[in-house]
Length: 168
Image 1 (tube, rainbow, N blue to C red):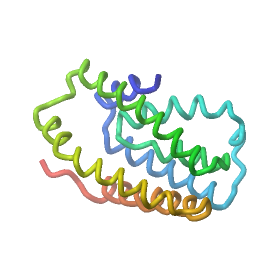
Image 2 (image 1 turned 135 degrees about the vertical axis):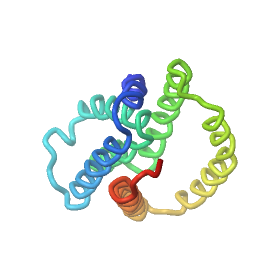
Image 3 (image 1 turned 90 degrees about the vertical axis):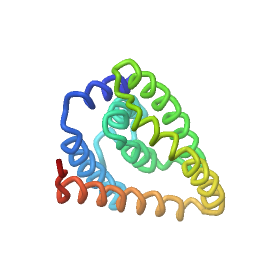
Image 4 (image 1 turned 30 degrees about the horizontal axis):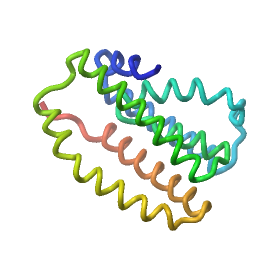
């Protein structure tokens, strides 16, 4: 449901501002998970609905937001299989909705379609490789790997958005 909101946000809010804000939020949530800070209503199942809505909008608007949902699931102590399955289904629904929304709003260009086609093979390769790696990890290592990946990728995005100015 949040995906159409994300399409509207993408066309009306500066993308770099959204990315900076999301990166800071993700880093704050990561710290809460790592240091076991109690988040009000964080363990309640009712938090998944607003978080899912918000993440749907953020993913479509900026390509970011998935870590927020993953962190919420880690905070709730979901197993690795449950986390992977829930995220896969969530992203399948989000990407289908987003693709339809992009088409309706005219956000597809020849360049974007070309880039999509270019990355299909590496994405499929990465999917297969990650399945082989993750299947060999125990719960603790999986959790640490997810947290490390979320932290590093958020810092990279934050650094890029804050310190690399676009050249026009």
